[in-house]
Image (cartoon, rainbow, N blue to C red):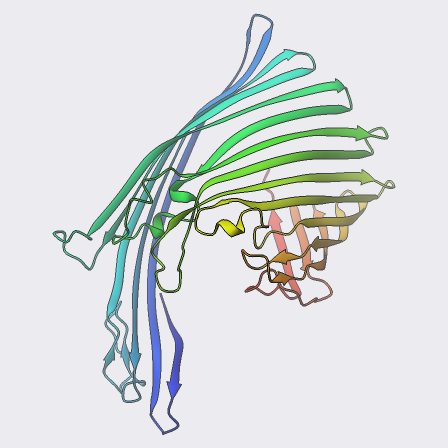
Length: 398
């Protein structure tokens, strides 16, 4: 529960101050369970390593919100709408709750995956997942007879995944995979957005699907002193929801179309000396608008907020088995800040460092983010984190 002074105005006269007060209280309950069964068996000459399972999650959320504008005659007094207590002896400006909703969401998933060894150097993986999800929103301020009192949406989806791994030599493995994932109600819309007054036609449409294709190779070099992984990927997102006019109509959503990301990723870790390790990676991601039903002129342009180039390089020193020191740099390239690619945000390089020491069952570490306290912007509306220090102490029970 919290009170926030969001804004106001002053005419210049004593007491003539208009202020905006906000009260909010939110209750959240989440319950999740997972049961998995693993099996290892043979069918003829084929070895199977199989897992089947069930997971379920329940989520409840009940936000209460009150806000009001108060003139200078009542700025010294207001009533907490959640407790009924007056916060001051002067003024009679009560804050009435204008939003009181209740949301609940249920998701049940069944999954199975089988890793089949066809030969000593060739494996095939086949898997699938079936989900059923349902979300309900109730407006606690309306009567049950009102048509906007309750909204409920539900759906099911099937998500396959397949892959193959071939080891032409003991130090190299080539793989290829396809997987599909989904996000209910279009990905950007959660149970909290399925408001009691929401038009459900759009929510009852197909969920957002992410289809990912990937091929790559993992290798060991120099007697396992260097390990590398190189992959090429293609990710397609469909049925993406968005808000055409978030300022004037924040609860109206539309289906925008499709997006596509194509790229290459390289990562490595190597042992330079007995105590010195070097790790790093580079990513190239060409993320574009494949289809835009609202603004066709944006098709083929780069997605806003997605850098084309990213990378990192870290050096770790381990003088003993119980201590380490690490320092490195992270690079994020330039990004477009709008969908028509006319405004660009400059990229940045950030230096981070960490030290750690273990004493028996005790684990301690100190991490410094943005060691040089560089000023940068993560997005057009979010500045980068200034220098920050995080200390951890943990104890491991035997």
